Image (cartoon, one colour):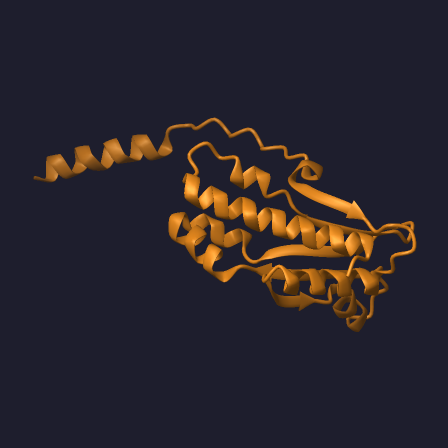
Length: 165
């Protein structure tokens, strides 16, 4: 019995101590992971936010959180440009997505960020949901719902960028 335990221990030690080649770091072009729109000429940041909220309400998607990041940075004694995140959610679709694959929880709720760039121009930025939707193994019925959410978010972002009410 002791001989078997020793052989098992040595086999395990060999497997665990075998040199493994380091994995190549994954390089991601972050610009390809997002969709962004500049605010149209004459559209102010506050107007864009109000337009997004109104469009979300009209399309029956809930604004579940607002994160005033630049206010937090200023409260910590640092100067910063305006940066806010608005989180929207279709709770029933979100539930189905997470039930289908728990990894989708990392992408919830859907966010649209309002960000002022170094030149003072405002942008609306959100994740490129097509990266998730175009997965060939995605359930067709769920894909249909995900496309609807993507289109709704795009409508919200476009309304904000154009100041549409």
